[in-house]
Length: 95
Image 1: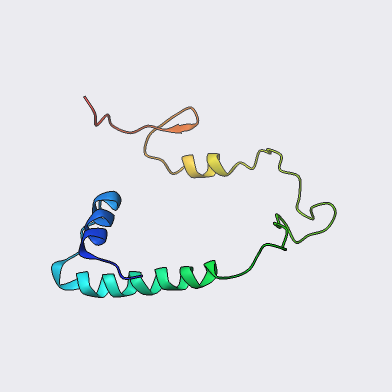
Image 2: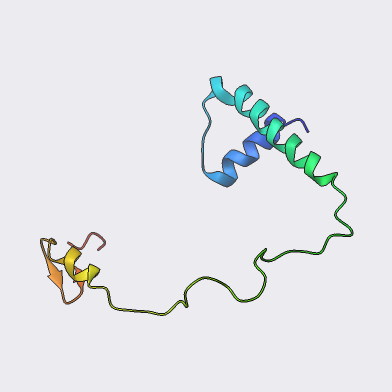
C-alpha cells in the first residue's frame, strides 16, 4: 500500500506529531513497508486454527497476584524534600 500525502497529514493530526518536510518522503516509504508487511500477514489462512490465549497447559506457573507490604515507598519517601503522610508534597502549579 502506498502512503499518500493526505494519509500522512491525517496521521500527523491524529498523533499530534509533526514531521519535518525533508523527512516526509522517508516516513511515507517506511510506513508503506510496514503496511505492506501487515498485508502479507493478512494473506495467511487461519480458518482452521483456534485462537490461542496461552500456550501453557493447565494451571498458570505464575505466582498469585496478591498485595504485600514491601517498604519501598517508605525508602523512597525518606529522600523526599517534603512529604505528607505517604505522599510527596509538591508546590501547587495550577491556580
